[in-house]
Image 1: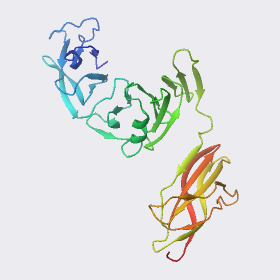
Image 2: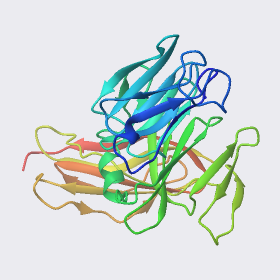
Image 3: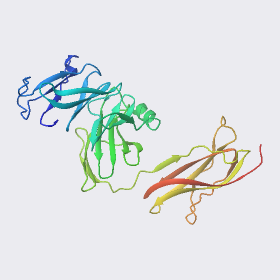
Image 4: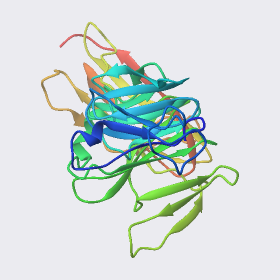
Length: 314
């Protein structure tokens, strides 16, 4: 629905017909006969490939395979003005576009983007693109977004290469991703008032309704490698993960090596000391990294501290 019109595209075998958008008469969804008087009509979009999705409102945002168009109402005799506002980027499929407020989120063949009505910017590049596209079954093309506006989270359900339904989650306030998570669902609907989600799985499987109040999934975080002592080795006598929550179970392991081309040697997983929060892992090397495992009721993992001192060169 765009203003007082219904605007549609057609999924036909004819390639020419796939580039056409049509709209009904002003205020009359039963009249589709082109007429300047009634303002019903049609338009061929010359570039961008097949029309996949139309998002309505005061103007129409039209997602093609390789471009995004904007249709603005101008009245008779033109009725609508069509502008190609973005070239070389469009919707991967008709199911992968969702509007949240004034922004539109979508999946392009190169990753996830957000469109503000004028241009789009990437939200997954150099972050989760490789993980997602390695897992995503492109041949199936099925991906379904659902918005949890109360918690500022956008869920993307998709079929992976093993024919399993999985989910990536994007928080548009913190601009962070999590996932993929296995979940048996093909469609979901959020109840923002009750902070709950209804999951509708594939045929033959039971539907589910649940509140978003359960424990978080166990976290596994490997930090970047550091060289605390630029002139030589460093002895690390402990690491302290900074984890907020209700008595979560936190373990840490220390991975060390003297050369960036050598193997990483890991210490055993060690529980943190409940008094100071330190994990008593120890190693001497030039390069160090940590592996943090968190289970139970936690809310945030915000950092990591090292207890280290420099040693001589080797």
